[in-house]
Image 1 (cartoon, helix red, strand yellow):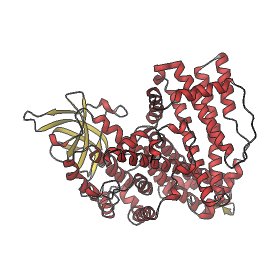
Image 2: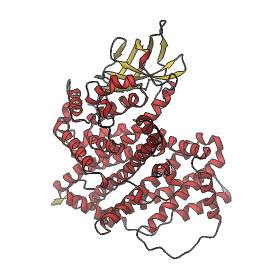
Image 3: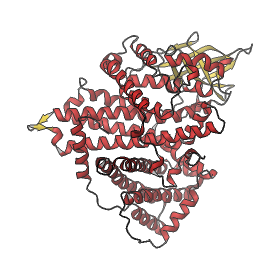
Image 4: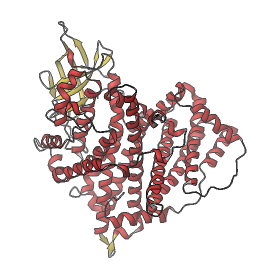
Length: 593
C-alpha cells in the first residue's frame, strides 16, 4: 500500500489541493501522547515556573539539577531509540513535548539545545560505537551536550569557520585550535559538537569531551534568556581522538544543515508553547484589571488583541502539526524502503525543509507579536520586571536569530523551492504557465458553490496563483541573478508562508467540522476566516511590490490586473468575528484551543 508520504512532497502544497482528511490535527493526539504532554506540563509548573528568577540569576547548579530531573522523567529521551535508553517516540510526540516545555523560558532553551542540536548529531551521524558510548547518558542527563558552530566571523555563513583541525603525527588525534561563540549550555556541558576545517577546507564535525585544551569565556550578558548558559568556547591544542570524528571528513555541512531543519520546526513548537502561556496570562490579567469601573476585557481594543493572539497561536499550531505529521509519514515511508531509523528521520526532515524554514519564521514572529501585545494588555505593569511580560518580551526576541535568522530562512525557503523546480522535483513551471494562460484568458463564471469553505478554498487557490505568477515573472526576468534580489525573494517567501499557514488553519478547521459539527466549532471557523482574510490583504500588498519592482508598461498593468483579480474576496466582518473569538477566550480564562 502506498503511503501518503510517497505522494506528499515538501513544497508540493503550492501545486495541489490538500484533502483535510489526510492531515493530522492536534485534536487527534492519543491518550499516551496527552499523558506525556500533561507530565511535561506538570514538571514545568512544579519545578521551573516557580524558579524563574533563580534560573535567570543562574543560581549555581540549578539548571543542571533541572535537566537531571527532566532526565529522570524521560523528557530528554523522547527522540532517542529504546536501544540507547530512550523512548523512541514519533516526531509529532517530540514536537508536542517541545511545545509544552517551550513555555519554560531559559530552561526551554537549555533543554532544546541538549536534546536537539547537542544530541541529534550523534544519533543521526555517529558510528554505532559513538551512539553506544554517548546516547544512553545523554538520554538520562548524566552527560549534557552543546553545539559549537558559530564563530566571531561566521554566523549565517557557517561554512566560513576558521577553527582548524590538524591530524597528529601519530595519526591518533586531531588537534583543534579556534574560537566558538554564543554556545548554549557551554557552562556545564560535558559534550561539545564542534565544527572545524580539516586541512584548511574540509568542514568536519567532531565530538569533543570537556577537558584539557578546551576553556570557556565568561557568561554572556544577554537581553533575554538570561538563565541559559551562553559562553565562548576556546580550543587551544585540544586533542580529539580520531574515533570522535562525527560523520565523514569534509561532510560537516550535512550535519549542520540537516540538524538545523529539525531545529527550525522545533523552535516553532517552543515558540507556540510560550505564546499559549502568554495568551493565558494576558486574558487572566484582562479579566482582573479594572478601569472605568469594569474589567478591561470588556473593551473592544483589548478584545481585538486577545483574539489576534489566539488566532496566531491556532494558525501556527495547525501548520506545525501538519508538517510534523508529514515528516513522520515520510520517515515511515523511508524506513519501509530499508533506511535506518536515523537515516529515515533525517531524510524526512530534509524533504520538508521548506516547511521547517517557513515555520521557524512564522513561529518566532507569531511569538514576538503575542508577547508585545501581552505587554500592552498589562499596560504599565507589562513594563515592570515584577510581572511576567517583562521576561516573556525579552526572551522571545532571540528566536528570530536562533536556528538561522529569519532573513536567512526566508531566502532559504525560496532557494529550496526554486532549486526543486529546476531539478523537476516540483512541476512549478507547468503551474506557472497555467496561471499565465488563465490571466490572458476570459474568466469563467460558473454557478456559485455554496458548500462550507468553498469560497475560502478558492481564496487559497488564488493566493497560490499570485505566488506562481510573481515568482515565475521574477525568475524569468532575473534568471540566475534572482538570488541577488533579496527584497523580492523576501516578499515571495512571505506570500509562501501566508499560504501555508492559512491553508493549514482552514484544513484543520474543516476536519474539526467533520468530527464535531459546524456549530460546535464555530469559533474555530471564525479564526480560520479572519486569518485568511487578513493574509489575502497582505498577499495583495506584497505581490504589488514585487510586480512594481520587476516590470513596467503593458506587462506591469497585466500583472497588477492579475494580482487584483486573484486577491479579490467577499466582504467579511472581522471585527465581530474577533469579538466572538475574544468572548470564547475570556469565558475560558486561558488559551482554550
